[in-house]
Amino acid sequence: MITPDDRIKDALSDDDYEFLNALEGDRGLFQQIGDTWKGPLGGWAKLIFGFTVAMGILFLFVIWQVAHSADHPVVHALWAIAGVALLIIIGFAKEFMFARMNMLTILREVKKLQVQVALLSEEKDHD
Image 1 (cartoon, one colour):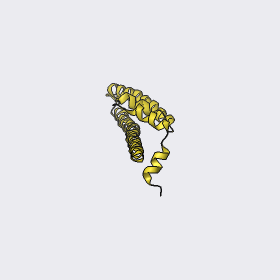
Image 2 (spheres, helix red, strand yellow; image 1 turned 90 degrees about the horizontal axis):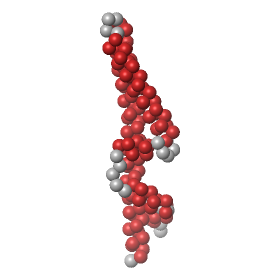
Image 3 (cartoon, one colour; image 1 turned 90 degrees about the vertical axis):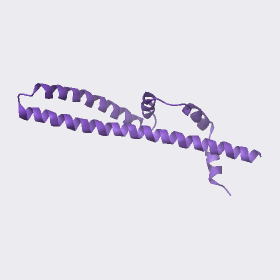
Image 4 (tube, rainbow, N blue to C red; image 1 turned 30 degrees about the vertical axis):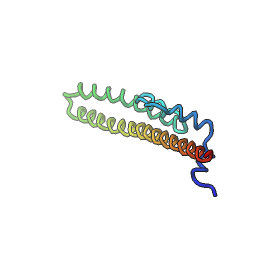
């Protein structure tokens, strides 16, 4: 009878062991952001990152407009509303990036557990 542990052991390859070794140690914020740019959703992560940078630059322009339109109350209010809208958009984009970073961290831990189960299973088979 094949147990789940046997299936995990069979599914692991040398690439998995290399992957586990690459995951050792703490990873900083910038390394984690770089990790989001790889894999199947890497293109989307790059697009969202570029979009966030562009929205940040646009937000700085909007803040400048708010500061220089104080003598026109309606224009001033519209620029301020645009600034709030940009902050919300930037927040959602950053939420996507951080959710992806958290998902990759969880996958990293699951992969470590898979390798540990496979190693324990191999030790058990040798005894």
